[in-house]
Image (cartoon, rainbow, N blue to C red; front, side):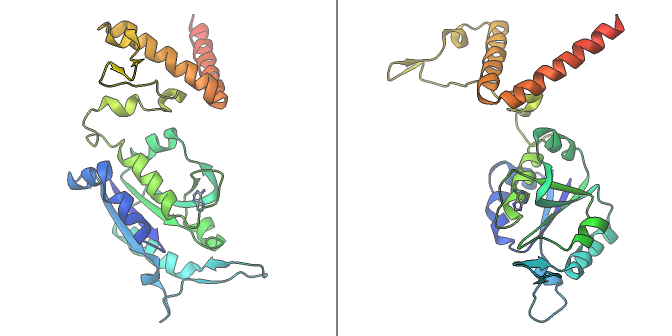
Amino acid sequence: MRIDIIAIIPEILEGPLSQSIVQRARNKGLVDIRVHTLRDYADNNYKSVDDYAYGGGAGMVIRPEPVYRIVHELTQERDYDEIIYVTPDGEPFTQQTANSLSLKENLIILCGHYKGVDQRIRDHLVTREITIGDYVLSGGELAAAVITDAVVRLIPGVLNDETSALTDSFQDHLLAPPVYTRPEVYRGWKVPDILLSGDPKKIEQWRLEKAMEKTRTLRPDLWKKTEREEDDASGREGDKK
Ligand code: ADE
């Protein structure tokens, strides 16, 4: 997979994309991540990429020319599955979005700044708009880092234990169950007996129950989704009979 990130402050991306699992994926050649500096595509000596908003009002807007230029350069070289613009008014980023993006070949992620990018870029170049949550960041770079991290770890071969992504929180709309490691007793706090029982079936059942309990209590919104999907599935089963 190849991910091209277009940023105004590329330095923000350096840390998150050169550590841990993402760095390992890059080293193994499983993902090719390129960070581009939008200012390098400015059409003026000052390397400025923003201007005042038509109609007035506070805040600057990213001009269309430099964005068009870099996107054009990239798309001349290869086809892209999605040109994603990260913005607070996009569709919410979820584990399901990460799952589907991890199956793509080539992605562009465009980071906004200031009041955002000229609407004509959104209308004519961008294929998908994504927010990482209902809050406003200073720029899109951190959002691009979050999306890239969540997607890259799902690429087959990236995680050592292939099953570990499948048991993450949010796969199946459930939060992950509690986990424990040695020692068996720490400051008098004991690991639940069931986890020491050596009975994989019982342990699996316990983990599922804990995951359901946690989701019901901490995230009733997710829990409703799980219930709805189960109802739909049993409805479909009923239809077949
Ligand atoms: N840019 C600024 N805030 C953002 C957010 N919440 N999600 C994605 N991009 C952003």
